Length: 428
Image 1 (cartoon, rainbow, N blue to C red):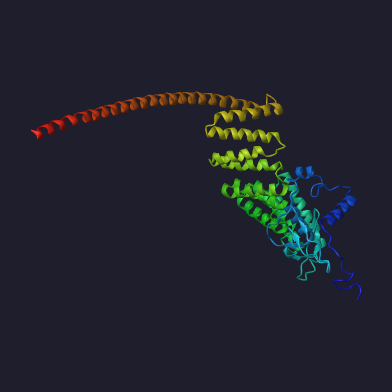
Image 2: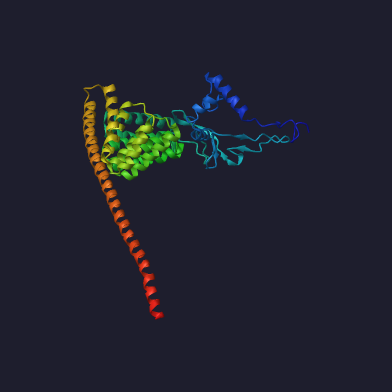
């Protein structure tokens, strides 16, 4: 039969390679959005080197899988480097090998359906197979749930915490009745609002519980590296630290720092603030060396807010004072004072406080230098005295050694005369 089987013309002779796929993507993006892709597939070597740290391939891979319903084996993929689209068998036209994602790495492909209660572009969810036709009161309850959430948000902005809590809890209940599952993006937002209401009302136990639910729902919906999971870690960290549970709060701060660098790259401005918050917690716990380490990391990161940079510099100077490094503290505080003067002026309270700190640190550094000079002088004198003592001891040892040698030589001279006298007596 013509056109049937491995040698027929019904199967293509080759599988489209990476260049062909990217050419179609770039053509379609240019046609739809009048935009030229330059971040993930730049042909210029200089552009590739400049944007290498900005292209975050792992979050992109996760989002593609979430949007298309593809399920991959959970392992580390070497994305962003060399890849192989293994071509095709010349007889069957089937894919033989690919790297870094092989055909055997694809576990499943889930069909997606458009959800009626979608928000902010999150329109598609995995298709359920339990035969439910959805809530019959969907069109009635969905508008009510939206109205409840909006009222709760408005009362939260107005400071009416009790009403905000009441409306947000009711909205979460209505949304769960509408979508028939607690795993929905709008339910996670309701949990976030509930946690914030408890937090501002100083009810830390309920705030932590709501934030934990918010984190669980967010991770279940978008994975551990989605934006909602990052916001949930922020809520958990704030609630735990305010409640005095520093150890657990630091874990969520480190999770925030990791997700920020993973999702947004090393140039995201909030990374510096997160490092500073971690260092501040270590400083309050008395672990000054660890605080200095995180302060230095915060200062090395990109930060668009110059005032945050001044605060980091001042905190670093205070930590250096705690460990006795007054000269380094003076230099860093001086830079902070110059920044305050440039942006706030000489008459601002922060500038005056920084100036007072500069004067104090300079005085401490001068006193430390004087003490160090005296100590160095004493050490030099002690070394000189030790050297003189060593020379005297060595001279005495040399003199004793010379006396011992003289005594030995006298004994050797006396011994032959005695032997001669003994021999003369024996001859007589």
